Image 1 (tube, rainbow, N blue to C red):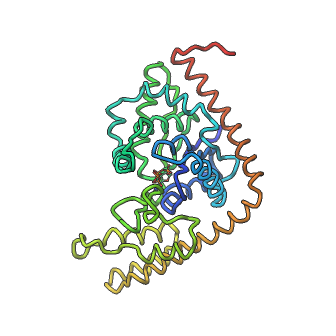
Image 2: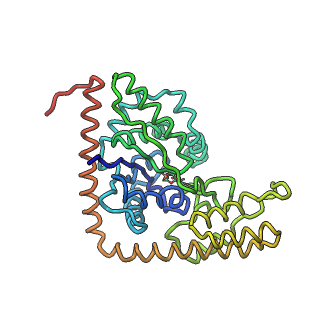
Image 3: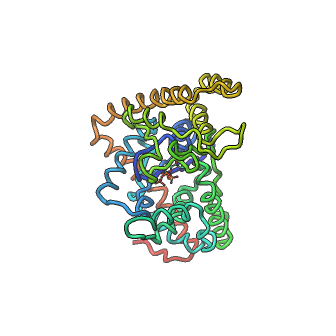
Length: 336
Ligand code: AQP
């Protein structure tokens, strides 16, 4: 019997998981578990690349684990990145196969370094710059065939392939698998407060709608979604309205979507009605996830043990890769 293909994807514990994370990536993660060997990482090393609070980081890590379990990720597929320190070791090795000019041009680095430089200390870390190389290590360490991520990660995945290629060429062997991106039907969800920027955990509360938010807050956020930013050509749908329709498609409310689109096309759409349907649709998901989370977090100790065990099992694959990589690239191969 042929081995199942491997899927790897990760999420940062930088705040509340939002509908952008869910529709852009995590919803797909749940579905892929049936067909593939899946490994999903809560990447706490990555969460250190922007200014952060150590106590909050650990809290966020576990909160994100509970959230992922509540939406349907199986505990045996979930690991915490810092429990698999080989990610950092491979990241260092791969730094030597990553072209400086390419890393420097990553859009996410440009966006986040701007965000960081506006902070209290105006501090931009080398970790933030090097983030995409660590991400390449996250993927390559498991020899992943597929990486289900949102559109915002496309550039990083291309860099991962370049790094893998350069490594393979240098060691004279097709060692690393070149991973393929798996897109969802929802490439990018935008902030409802500012439809020109993507919904994001770290951009501030108003720029993300948490999957586990208090329902009244969720309804308030959808109710105040920007629908007309004033820069739309006559007859063209504004980015804010497009985003609200996108949310309906992502949530598979095609009946609601089609009916409202018809009224949009004949010029009778009331934005308040569109917002009401979007709020009801998201609230239905929110209620279900909140209830799941409430039930499963009755026994947090059991969850911690499951994740510890899963991280330990997943680490064995990472250790094997790092051992082989060290052999291939001429590092000391003495075994203690
Ligand atoms: N707005 C989005 N639309 C679609 N997909 C999205 N993703 C994130 N935002 C959107 C996808 O979610 C997965 C996990 O993302 P991440 O936590 O690793 O980092 P990110 O892409 O930087 O997400 P955030 O929420 O914006 O976090 P912060 O603010 O901390 O940077 C990825 O697959 C991503 O594509």
